[in-house]
Length: 247
Length: 123
Image 1 (tube, each protein chain N blue to C red):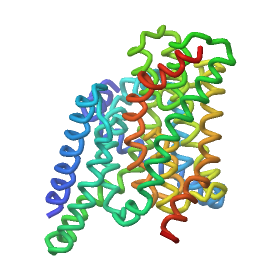
Image 2: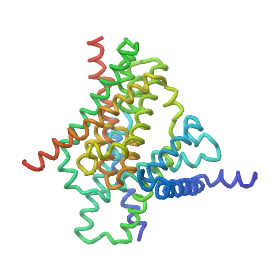
Image 3: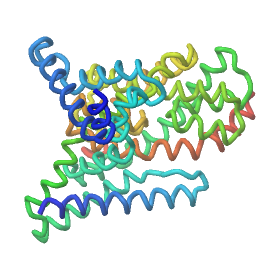
Image 4: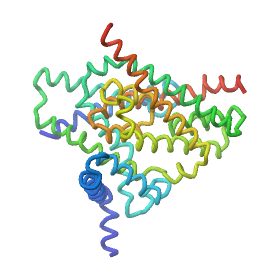
């Protein structure tokens, strides 16, 4: 047993390949034979992974030493590398066509998320500009929240709430996207770019689109990747001043 | 050779990340602004140019396509390493705010996409 643990410890990434492969095989089987294709296999695999992550800690299942390799496979380096690789399937003319809508959706996505998040924070009893701004920023993504919070000096409790808001959004986008895709006409490169710009959570957008139609991943990821930067730029500056003026 | 494709991908990735980081410094917010997006644009352009000059062999291309296909498994691993406990325990503010934002943004997707498509039909 000890030998096995040492072996897995040394070969964490390889063990992660085996585990993810197994989880996907079970998920695709379940999708095909039990659900008869009503939910795509990728969506089931991602949802199952999120459920498993609940039993872990801060880094999900990777908090168990034996599963540490999952953090490497699912970490930002390989994730971004693979997202860039999906651009091989993207067409430049499609991107140009959706350019304006993409930029518009980015701006609207950040500002609208901020206002809605801040408004709900205000309704639920937070009435100082710092807390409202930080929670509003968390409604953008779980990176914009803490970046903004620490820039304007919010309390750590509020920063934790802002991170939680962003994480809930990521999880929701991941699970709900394949379910609502048809209703919101998310079936072409143009709407995928708009979707990426509005939602902004790179992980949620990428996972949600992967579960909906892998061909759309590069388009959504392309806009979403600018969202966090734009949010981190606007929230602690213009948007914070705006909240200060209103409160 | 497949490694040529992987090397092209790695080059585009690093160049994009470099520009993203420089942009972050320049804007004074640190971090990486759109690094992945820039990298994707570079890869699309490189792919376009190499294909026109017939410099990209099928085998090199397979090196890139492998990583593109690894995307979903990587996302599964990423999902398994999210802080889901924090998301659930963040309280009602976090849940209400996230649900409201996600819902409204979903509704806006078809509205904004229509603007984009109208433009392309009658310029």
